Amino acid sequence: MREITYAEAIREAMSEEMRQNDDVFLMGEDVGVYGGAFGVSLGMVDEFGSERVRDMPISEAAIIGSGVGAAATGMRPIVEIQFSDFLTIGMDQLVNQGAKMRYMFGGNATVPLVVRAPEGSGTGAAAQHSQSLEAWFAHIPGLKVAVPSTPEDAKGMLKSAIRDDNPVVFFEQKLLYRKKGPVPEKEYTIPLGKARIHRDGGDLSLITYGRMLPLCLDIAKELSDEHGIEVEVVDPRTIRPLDRETLISSVKKTGRALIVHEAVTMGGFGGEIAAVLADSEAFPYLDAPIRRVGGLDVPIPYCPELEKQVVPTHDSVRSAVLELLDWEYGS
Image 1 (spheres, rainbow, N blue to C red):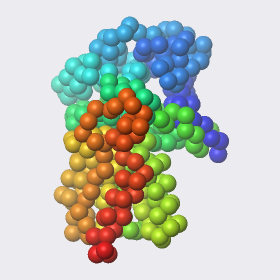
Image 2 (cartoon, rainbow, N blue to C red):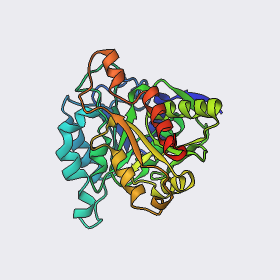
Image 3 (cartoon, rainbow, N blue to C red):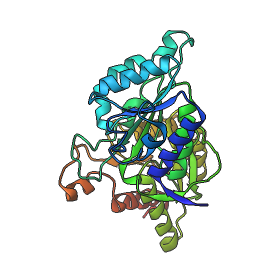
Image 4 (cartoon, rainbow, N blue to C red):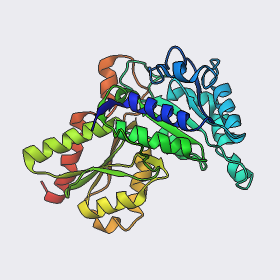
């Protein structure tokens, strides 16, 4: 299978859907000639023109509001927000209007809107451009929330999101844009709401998503090679709807759960996953408390060395795995 980058996979998904359906179009700040803040839409304006790859004014409220209106009147807009932090400027349009419209009109209105938003730290963009806010949006009935972790998932899930009749917030982790991975050349989609087990194991369930997935997979391989510890790595991929069945089944098998995400631990989506596990048939199978490793309770620093330390690191995740296993072995 060929390998392409996460950014290329997203561009392919948008381009393919735009070729297949004239109602699909892209809108956002500098998505045309400039190719988007992270170059994801490079070259698309040459194929589709400025009517379908639309540069918008610097107003996230106007951009998201226009997207909601276009979706409600028959189009399928893809809205790009340059940084996920700027979603806060369009919260009324997305949360109070787009998310509620289908319900308030008794199902007679649909809002097939995709809002793409680069999130996360690691680029030296400091406190106002580096947050991971996915838990905010997962809290809102009417929204679907996707956080793909690989190029294959990014393409397949974005195609499903574009075809969905509900608004989908599609978080793209910035440090993944240049990472390559296998992506099928043939047409495919990946359903929203279905988790993926990246590595089988019987000693502990490591539940993670976004750019923490490669980190966790490296740690799982290390521990297998060095100590024979077999960690099962599970990626929810979509946090709303959440694939509870896969998570519960994994924890019933391993008896231990560690949840890792870049977002601040306090109020992060890991707390919801922990509650789902604790309130399920997995609970009697637990041999240790459910544990979370997330970001520290501080804004993201500008200083590169400090920035690296406020989100989960290789050492902090590895230590948490070993500590959880100590509960079983009593050491």
